[in-house]
Length: 433
Image (cartoon, rainbow, N blue to C red; front, side, top):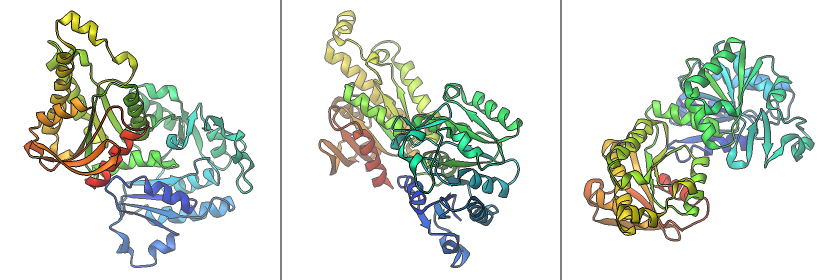
C-alpha cells in the first residue's frame, strides 16, 4: 500500500503534487479515478510510494464533490498509509470547504486539517490569511473572473468557511518566528477551542518546512491541505520514518560572492534544506575547534529532517569581512587567511561525512579553493568526470580516499543564474536515485 495518498480535484493537480516527489526516491502514480485504482486486484499497485487519485470535482456541485472525496477517503482510511493529503488548487478554486469536510467527516474526531495554501515557487504566498498571487491579492487576479469557479475574496478562511461546517483557526506569519513548542501550543489552543481546520501563513519554502517540522511533532493525526509543497515537506518526514527517504546531499558552499548568496537564497526558498552559517573569522584563530564542533553538531542533529544539509560562509553582505584589515591585524597574508577558512570548512564537511556517511548520498561544493580543501580532507585522488550539469559545473564520482565512488557536483562561485545551485543539487539527486 502507498505511504502517501493525495486526493486531488483535477487531473493536472494530481500530477503536479505527485511530481514533487520525483527526487525523493519514490515510485509515483496518478489514477484517473478511484475505480481505475481498484479495477484490478487490490494489491496490484502496492509498490507505489505516492499515489494521487483524481476526483474531477472542482467545478461540480458541492454535494457531489463531498460524496466523491468521502468515497476515496473511506477507501483508504483503514489502510496503513502515512499521510493523507487533500490537494487544493493553488488559487483556492473549487469546492474547498466541502471537500475538507468530506475528509474530516470520514476520519476520527481527533484529526486536524492543516491548510497551507502557499506555493512560493509559483509565486503564491499567504500573509495575514490572505493569498497573494505574484504579489497581487487573489480577488484582484483573473481568478475572480473564472467562468466556472470564480473566487471573490483573498481570505482563505472565508473561502473555506463558505462550504465548511467546521470552525477555522489561523496561525499568522509572526508565529513562525517562535520555537516549535510554542507553535504546537498555539495549534493545541485552537484545537481546544473546537477548531479542526487550521490555516497557516507562509511566504517561502523555509516557512513551509518549519510548519511541516512542527506538525510532525503533534500528537493529533493530521491531513495536509495544500497545492503540493506542504504535502511534500510533511510527506518526506513520513517517508523518512518509514525508511523510504533517499539519502541527503551535503552542500559545502564557500564562495562569498553576491551571486552565490543569491543562489543560496534560492536554494533555501525552494528546497527542504538546512544551511548552517559558519562564522568564518572563528576558523582563523583559537575558536576554530569550537566553531567546527558547533556547525558539525547542528548539521548532524538535523540531518534526518532535511534533504539537503550543509554549511555556507555567507548569506548576507554583513557576513563578509575585510581581508586586508584582518591581514594587518593578525599578521597573516590574505592567502593564509583564505586557506585557514577553506581548511576549516573542509574539516566540518569531513566530520559530517564521517559521522553520517550512511545518510549522505552525494556532495555539492562551490568555490574552487573549497573544492580542493574538501577533496584533500577526505583523501581523494581525483574526480571521475562524467557530465556537464551546466557550463563550468560538473557531475562525477570521487576517486579513491575515504569516499571512493561518492557522487559529487562541483561549481565555480561566479557561475550560473540564481537557481544554479538548486539545479545542480537536483541533478545530483536524480543521479543518486
